[in-house]
Length: 482
Image 1 (cartoon, rainbow, N blue to C red):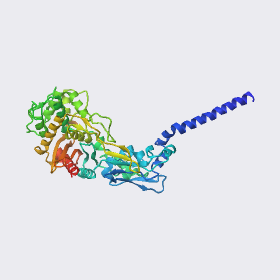
Image 2 (image 1 turned 120 degrees about the vertical axis):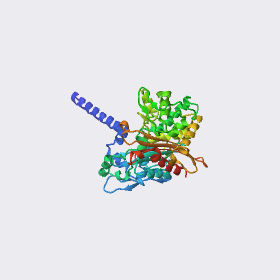
Image 3 (image 1 turned 60 degrees about the vertical axis):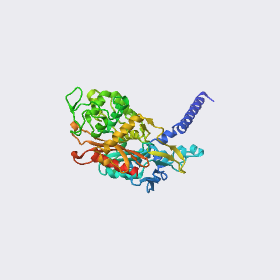
Image 4 (image 1 turned 90 degrees about the vertical axis):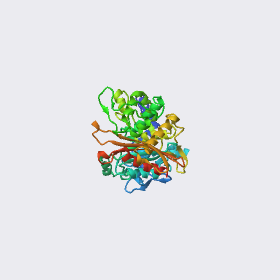
């Protein structure tokens, strides 16, 4: 063989080897990445090749699948009472992807999760019968919150303080995920995107707003834990009128004639005395208040239930007047309804916060658990003594204060309202908040609820935590303790 032919033969052999190496690399190493690529049509075809598994509430599926015609996607997602459960399920759309529980557990729901396959199927990648996602949602609590919110722009979260189980998670205005489940729903999708009320936003988890006076519970907890005051009935020495540090601005109280001068924490919570908690925050210092807020869950960027909640925020780098304003839940303090429900839940549960979760199990087609969730042992946020004092003070707010709309027959109820200022010089309609707990006097069953009314559409003069948010919480608590 002459030299030229030999060189050509070697070169061709190297090309063949390169092709074999590349083919092996693609099939052995790049296969999963290519299969999972959102631009891979085969991925979507496989996802909807068979009926999807279901998201289940109290033993009944709130999702389903329907056969399609004229498409290479054999099935599409359907929803039972879609608008009622949209904040829980999210959507599974052939055109726009999947969100929330539909997205997080998509591999189980479409049968591609390797845990669903036997060893042979795991090697071949053959699609299996899908599994289901079992939620902790109580349908009575969910419906009570949804109907009570009505046409208001707002959200509500109910959870069991003893277990961390999320019993209700509502965001309004809502939407029906069924209308965007197919491939030809562009008009419906665009309508949702263009809606100024943003129905696709999960306000319960993903729109932190100023919590107003509900944050006073966090400040009170810090004051008791730090030893600034020995009890909720000790006088605080708070001046009235209260002038913000380094300024001449007077911080007004919500109730002008309330007995807020030198008021105790119990009285200050009852009448929502701004002067008391602004002074308290300054006396404690921003670092102490922030540390307590973070124990309750503020500034947590990885709060998953399993849907990721946006972090509620207690800010840094504050001066004295800014610290004073954070004491009443203003300046740059923000919170989600989930976060404020966690505050009440920890107080109700002897100072221990159980991890909130809205999925109890993920199971295969035969009902065998693939994943199971609970609140764990929980984390102690405040001492038992501090929790008992705060709980007592919150009960006073409802039983002897102005929050008459939160009372539930046969139950001990505690709560705290909030009316958070909004806009420059409070020029926009304030947010109405209420965070609470209730315990059935006979069974000892508990529930914690937080409600946010972002906009109820009524006049500014009617915006209050008791008038707008407390009735929603009352209905959810009554449903939970039925």
